[in-house]
Amino acid sequence: MSSMRKVLWFAGYVWALPVTIPGLMLAMLFARLESVDEEGILHFVVEPGGPLAWYVRHFNIAAFTLGAVVIYSGADGPRQVRLVRHERVHVMHTLVLGPLFLPLYGLASLWQLAHGRDPYRDNWFEVRARAAEGLGYRALRLVR
Image 1 (spheres, helix red, strand yellow):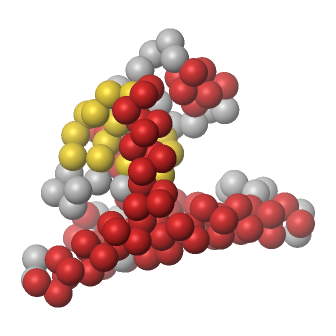
Image 2 (cartoon, rainbow, N blue to C red; image 1 turned 90 degrees about the vertical axis):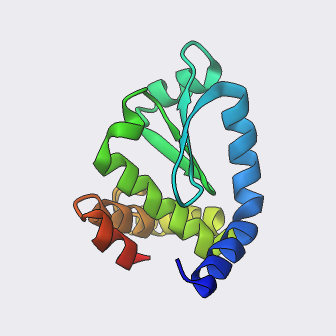
């Protein structure tokens, strides 16, 4: 990785801290660290029996991202390539948009709802993340 690329990654992580810190706190309370990838993304798996386990089960959530923290509902989550690719795109969204990501995500959902579309499936951020699911790692690096 070039020096400039490292500086940009670092700046993205700093910019995303207001979203990453609550994600890290939630993960530390209700999940276990599964891995940290080469780009510093933290992959957690929900601990069974806790309130977060109930939440992801109740709302049928396979994984979610808060900053550079990805929390998977099941132990196999971090090994599901499509799911990891999908969540990685949300990490990239946060590294670029920082604390603006969460309100912009909400606004994108409200926009879809106001236009009679599905607020999750048609959300601009979800459409982009789903598009990346089938890409190889090299192609995914070009998306960011």
